[in-house]
Image 1 (tube, one colour):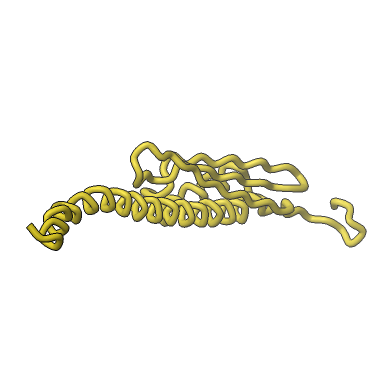
Image 2 (image 1 turned 30 degrees about the vertical axis):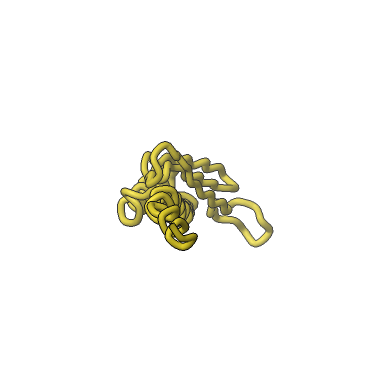
Length: 135
């Protein structure tokens, strides 16, 4: 038997072994890329919902309940499946309004539970005189 025929015989099955080892790793990497793209998108949805809720809650006649309702409408329009189990917290005082939105990101990789959040803060609208006092 020649050296060339022995070498060819020794390499049999190498491609199958490499395929079995490499393909699952590549699939996992692709799934992780998709998962983190969803996290990035969910963050934007949470931030947008917080900004919309802030705009509704900080008006002169606005309430925290109106802010929460606006955030829910934003979730429904943008990310009902991507940002699951959303929670909205609206803190409205006479001088400042803060909205915090948090939710769980849809899982692509089994067992990986990631969260996304967004916060928006702004002054509460109120009537004042030119000297800064309330009428």
